[in-house]
Length: 189
Image 1: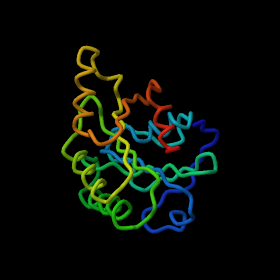
Image 2: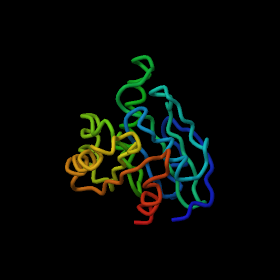
Image 3: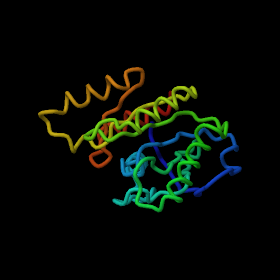
């Protein structure tokens, strides 16, 4: 798939007409600081379309990007650790739960992003199980493969594939644009 255009549409924190306009939604979810925004930027060939930060928990709303005037890329806040007050973290978690599991919005695909070097955390596995139970179409992206030592790369990727054995796992590096094309092709399925 060739991405020709991508624009930021809006940030939402709850019910919004944009979610119900019939445009397919491809949702990016993962723990804080796993590189969701970086992958969106890499996919769209724009360095600062989605705001990136080294501070976990910087994204605190649902950010919506219109791609090729055909579908939305939806960047959700990260789950897990965030440098934010407890009340803010709880509000973010409620928003994620509402959007993914209570809203009844129709998602074309859920892109679950994990840190390939760290491997799946208990939060990642819990999220995957919840998405699976809700019947969502999931693809797993193992991001930051460029941070894995070559001597352990194959073993690490195989362990990730074994854990998420029922889903396609795409090894990826947003920084080096590895796996980005393969991920874009998943949007056509």
